Length: 177
Image 1: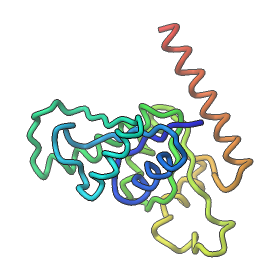
Image 2: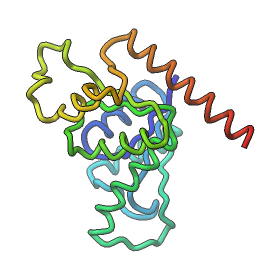
Image 3: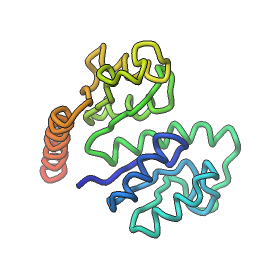
């Protein structure tokens, strides 16, 4: 019953879009480039086409025809991460290092009051959660109580409640504004 909003990046972003498409759910890709530019990363061109073919959307804050330098693209990747929580009822990180790219979206979500959840792999014996640097951001967010722990159906339901509360607050401000 949810739409996936993500950045079309390689890895977890692409997997989230693919999962939404497989489930028949809507998905929105926030691009770091203008809509008339080649998709970044280029290996996700086919995925971007599937998103559109299945009723999803590609969005960009950059006007068609905008020329970007290589240095600008790096900054746009971070800027794209501001839009994801702005368009979402909640942000869930599956895997992030302390300095990982997902941390930008998480930080923007926190600043905007958007609920943050991170997968908590402590109950998964096949994952060396405590020592694998890929999860150091997850551990940091959980240890500092900056995110909801997501590890099973009950915690997903609790996080859904936080997202509904957030949506109600935002709706109130929009209506009252």
